[in-house]
Image: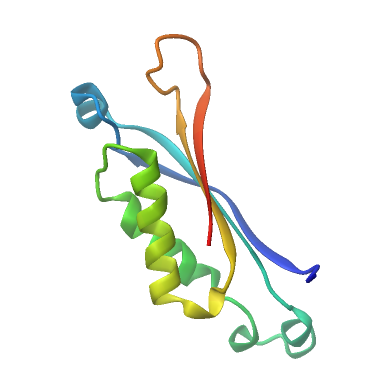
Length: 118
């Protein structure tokens, strides 16, 4: 089991995801977290971007996919995960979560979160 990991936590976006018309019109705050296990030995020695994962590429894919409105968080998370796998295959196995602030559940709920592992 690999002990090294790269995490991008708290990527914040304003987006218009949701099944309700009001969610699409008003928008909401979303947070995306990303984690992958990776051997960081070479990057730790070489200090070269080529020996690690380019965080900017990961963020760019997430940001692009967050701009596309979806009814369900499940769809948002799956689209992001599929795009990351397709466009940055060297990621390998990763975990991704998409959280939505104050989801309309008929009561008090601070966040709804979908987690995907690929």
